Length: 130
Image (cartoon, rainbow, N blue to C red; front, side, top):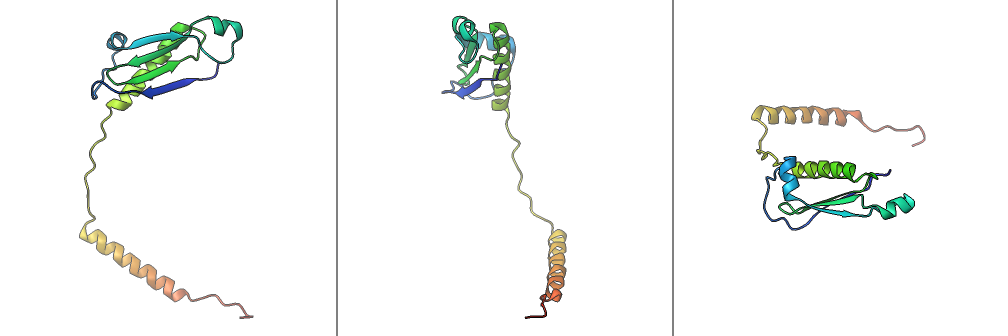
């Protein structure tokens, strides 16, 4: 079956970090079961195998309707929710501004002067008819 996934974020109730423990998540999330859309004919139109997990503390909403099995969809939805919460929990390390050392600056200027001289001595290419 084709992968059909939707992850959205609604108004969060609390700031990160969020727990990624499966048992704690099962207590926190709101599980909605609905009929999947897409190919599958009568069977897919009658069975409620798609899941929508809403995690109120973070506001993350994850949908899974990849599989005809509700249990498999539940597993994939929880995996996606954990991935999303880990991404939200990630705090980037603050970047420290650095400046080049005096020696490095002088080396760069020296190389630039050498390059300028090389380019200057090249001269223009002239054809015989000009």
